[in-house]
Amino acid sequence: MGILMKGKPVADAIKEELKAEVQDLKAKGIIPKLTIVRVGADPGDMSYERGALKAMANINIDTDARALPENIEQTDFISELEKINADTSTHGILILRPLPKQLDEKVIKNFIAPEKDVDCFNPINVAKVFEGDETGFPPCTPSAVMEILKFYNIELMGKNAVVIGRSMIVGKPAAMLLLKEHATVTVCHSRTRDLPLVASGADILVVGIGRAKMVNSNYIKDGAVVIDVGINMDEDGRLCGDVDTDNCINKASMITPVPGGVGSVTTSVLAKHVVQACKMQLSLL
Picture 1 (tube, rainbow, N blue to C red):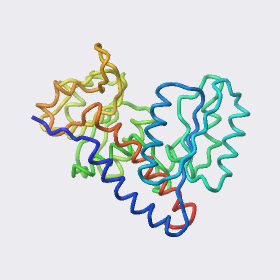
Picture 2: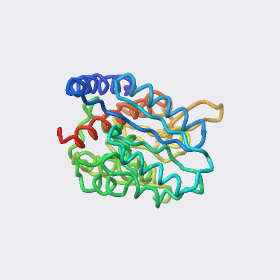
Picture 3: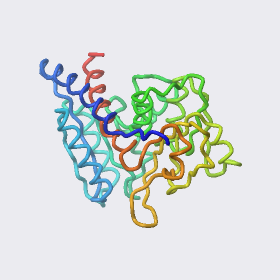
Picture 4: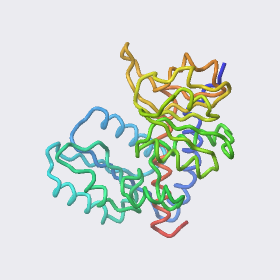
């Protein structure tokens, strides 16, 4: 039976390291700060916001949660964002997405200050991820994937990694981060031919395609490491991933659970990015 790679010990290790860093900054009169921008009152956004605020408080990072009206116009949104950009006390900005339809993300993403863009919204940070430039901030979810692999001592150099999903939020940046660690990476998607066959060649399989329990044991190589990024509801209304964990756990050597896996690490990664952004802005790195 495969080992469950739980996210909590990974998150706890990141938090303990950050607490020491924040304490050192505080001794210099510096307090890292995250500003969260939420439009409307979507339950998913509000849940993530609560989790992020709790995580920041636990590490002694200051926060400011800006709740903007659901019907805010684009010019007003950009005006609010530019005020936050100019606020020197704010080191990291997180815009909760997706935004309402009257707000064009393709336009707005160019207005968030790249040095404060801690979840890789601005195209400048996207480019830095693809270049391997560590002054950029990858999205928090694929960064959490990498933190889990590192914590559980998964060797990546020379290994075959398959990423199922090609979104800019998970799939593409995850592929770039795996390449940076010298894995040989294949990116698959809904139109990939013989997807189970391709996936079953992976030493490391990262799944983020947004379909509940789509991946079963036919997709898994004996002894593979499986990272499930999906968040879905199953037919019984229970939270589940893109991987059918019960069906795969006897074939995989290690596998992340849902819930309690990648998702539980993302807010700790967000905090790590805020502290890094703070240090970079103050020329402490």
